[in-house]
Image (cartoon, rainbow, N blue to C red; front, top):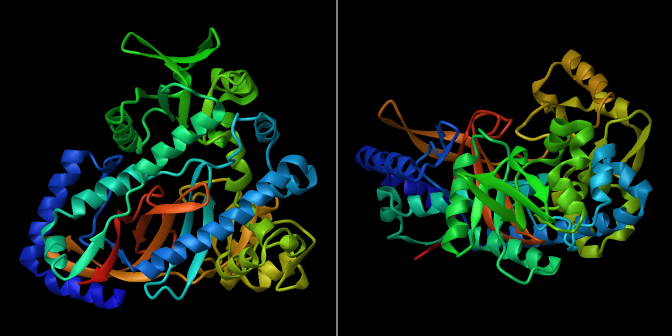
Length: 454
């Protein structure tokens, strides 16, 4: 059904309609400041279409795998040997030891996946459990696309269901605040570094929080002070006491920026004293490290999971291992990990254990043997994982290039947002190259709609 719907959408998109659609899209992106830095978020003229069955598959698969991961996170808090499998840094260990004041290790997250248009294959590639972006972007883009001429023509033939998620994020923040013990309406700080290309999304969230009667400000860790038992920031001569931090700053960058002084930073002092509700908490690192997939696919840990969780892991989570010398297991057999990695380069890739934006990823099937060998040797020096190749999803997407309509094949990343272990909404990323990440400097996002024929 989805492939038929795509073909019908493209058939409706004659050059005149494409030009009108692009003109309205450009106008709306500018009016709403929907840019990643100075680049428009969307460069295509069609959203991602999925069926009800595909959305339900995303929901059920994520619920099972996230549930299994959370069971591991709980166990790791009391088991240093199990936790060692994540290769946490000393600073991260110290922060994880601090209780956040509520139980959820990752209140909101995002599972990055490839789902083929027919829904036959759904493969997870990363679990962004610490500071997932794009919820507000996707909500706004969905609103924009419903106004486009091509979409309005398409809506004559198909029912279109948006997948908004901003409300779930707000509910999640407030639920964490209540669990923390907060009884009144909290002041919220949206926390990340200054000058980031995602600042336009922070503004969307600030406006959304304020529209829901919550006082909210955007600030940097450098702006924070801690006194009189309260975290503060100051803007435009206004002293702003902070109750709840919507944390977008990454823990690894925070620790790198402040070094030995990180634990004395106002943010950490307020958090350690139980005076600040931080969402996500520092304990999200237990799920965010890419090595979490190594634990989920570890033969020795399968008894920790239910039968349904084991089935979902086997179907959706690619074989992953920390890069280190010595034995490992693959398909129930003992292997020499480095020898296996050398012999199977064409179906493996290397990833830093804790990076984002495609940084440091080495794709075996696009790399020479010498480059792969060098990458393996370098991966032994700092925490890396080796991961098995998954089936990549492709779809055709239309765009206007030099005022002419083009339809090109693109890789499609389907990344559902999780609140706890429940899915609401989805980020879609498109690219013409294998490394699919907007942060890395290429590609496009697109809103996602569940569709059904009228």
